[in-house]
Image (cartoon, rainbow, N blue to C red):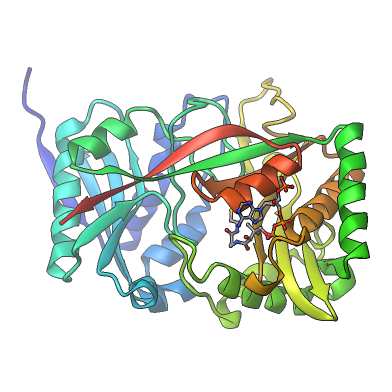
Length: 364
Ligand SMILES: CC(C)(COP(=O)(O)OP(=O)(O)OC[C@H]1O[C@@H](n2cnc3c(N)ncnc32)[C@H](O)[C@@H]1OP(=O)(O)O)[C@@H](O)C(=O)NCCC(=O)NCCS
């Protein structure tokens, strides 16, 4: 077999950013349904114009094989993450690749890891990176993943393991069927919390803009020691969430208070597959995958208010609102395998694991 001519490009031009952002359209072209990237936003990030880039040093790499683009990855130093955890951890985000390109992918990873080493990083992670990337799927290959999550091909694991990466963390995704029995259970959970002095309101009732700031504060406090997290600021969250004010997010997301002080927050979305997924004409999605699936994306409770049913009741109220919005399934998205308080919350809501994911790491 003739050797392929491999070239790794460290890109900086707008044209190269565009090619980088479009590669998933080749990788996932054969799928019945997938979530395409937001090309414009990705280019803004690569070009250093996104607000989050103030905290990052980021370098995109492209792998060319015989002048055909076959893989991409971005090496990232997230200073805010490293300051928070007192680590020297680099991240490889945006990884996508075509099949049967082992040499090109290996060469690209080599270059990206050298770039991280030169910046003093002691280890590299690929998979979960707060607000930047999501972990790699290890099941449901070919199916539409839950909103935000990766639906990568199975061969990605081979590329990552060949590059010396090992599984660092596992995460699970849950789905609850919004059956009449479960909806009744949710009403009882909310009633029990109310009797215990917990007041739960949707972001719409709370005041959407005020709720955004509460969500930021509660999430920063609740997730302070949560693996993978880094603190976020009001200034970056406000422009990200304010455009959702007139959408069902306002009815599905919740704030919990005790004695008028916020103690918990939930961020949930409606089914966005009709608006954002690419679905081949004639393909009908299973309702639990798309079309009738709301998603609880994030839940946090301040430490002082934990183990009193606050999370359960906030999620229950979010799920009841989803049912009123004609959704038949509810996601509880992305929980660490060993986060038993969160897993117990999901399971007490009648949710079951429907997807598994991993994040990789290697020493440098
Ligand atoms: C996960 C979290 C939201 C749970 O909030 P909470 O208000 O304490 O949870 P609840 O009191 O509603 O309890 C819900 C279930 O979890 C169980 N639970 C709560 N704390 C627990 C703990 N420390 N260990 C084991 N189970 C626990 C409860 O017993 C209950 O299960 P049950 O109905 O079977 O009895 C909270 O611990 C938190 O904010 N953690 C940090 C952020 C985080 O991990 N968020 C989720 C990311 S996926």
